[in-house]
Length: 481
Image (cartoon, rainbow, N blue to C red):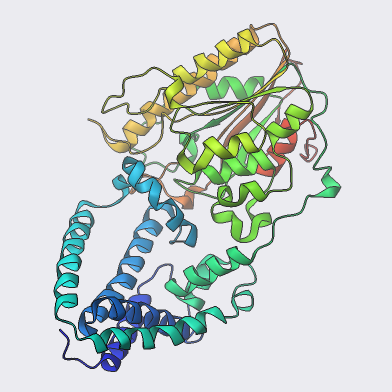
């Protein structure tokens, strides 16, 4: 494995990775030779040089360098097929979550791919040991000499000029798969913290609020009539959603950026009142830089207005660093998975939505001071498995989410205190072969005030930023037409 000259192996690596990059989706109509080819060549040189420096084998280094790009493209294409979004740099930050919560991700990876990944890892470790044992020292030096100049090229790369703003699909064609990952990461690192929207009175406190404000973020909650399901699948009625729309001050569809995942994007948008287009490169995982945000979040605004603030999410709060971030942005109290008593089952691995509704109502009953509650449900998180088809399993849990909404409506209606209840879906479900972003991405929302005013509800499609303003009492909706 050491007889091939390093420069010949490098040329083969660059050529092989050109072929791998051409398979990345989404494909542009006219992929540019520059800068995609230049970026691919530079990154391939870095990968090859590093692996040669470690292994000392030109052939093994070439195999690893091409394999790395092939795995990246394969993973990106798989993600694109499931979530309608290619791999982005922020996905690498959640690798720790993959190991801590594998069931959140592993269901989306086909079994043959899992087996191939295990076999490839075993083969790489065995081959690396053999290569290092037999490699002459000069090959390790060759690796360093090849890698360092390529690294210098990456350091001086004009990332700002290559990607002024994120345009994911066109940039994959223009910059290549690995090139777009690197350039977007560089642009994210260069991005300065956002500035407040002074014209929107970002630091203003909630105005004219009732005693209780409850915001409920519903996992994978969608109106099944809007999912484009096959006609042979019966769509169940959602009486809770229908009742909420009839009682609402305002309801409609919420524009969300993700499909099938990225709860954190919608959560951030509502908490901070920022849409994806305002976040530039932070939009892919806004939680990563939430501690730099200069616009006060909902809990901070309500706490300054004299409210106690409570965050409830019946799952591990370490996920997306919520256990730290939520306290920083103004929540007095956090309740997570350990605050609930529940024995998981194969068909119901997550804490039921009925438990969450009961906890919210119990909290409201004992509240003496004005209280702001932000709750995030978990029951209807994938994977949707069981004796029925995945879509049937999803719809079963969707009905439970609908019952949660109805349970809260009844409790608030008969609670005898002034209250505002806001709920929304974080994203639509991704069920391959059953749901598609072509049918849309928006999810239901409703704003209800107690006691009821008797006015006719306003139906409108809004953004996360607009919903944030409605919660704080500064509605930005357009007048009905």
